[in-house]
View (cartoon, one colour):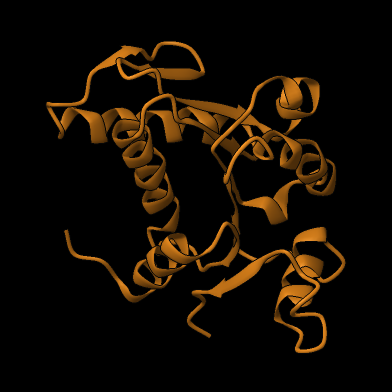
Length: 183
């Protein structure tokens, strides 16, 4: 597999950090790489619970189809169920796909080992979603990732990125910033 520079930066951060913010340009393959990360952990680890939070229903369906395509290229992956919003694997692991609005209704009901929020800068309720899902990671050493192309200056994602990158707040910020943007 050939990776671009943006994907390499992200993979390095995934190996080193638990709480990650990724600023990205479009068409860098970051979403696909994050879906691959969720699938890899779900296949490798027993009872691994991953959740992929999408900005809307169309993106949720697209992400599910990308993971199904990845599974077709890996014949050793046994999926018990994949027709609903949750793909369950024979090792007890699962990837749950949801939208930001759905997560606010039922986000605290399960513990997770990995939560990925894609295009967080386009979720009006990102701060509420973040507050809702972080406690579901506290049972273990879960990983929390928010990736997005930046939106507007007063959005919560922008605030998180500024806090993570500012020199004086670096120690106070719980997130590590990975900037993969070209400009």
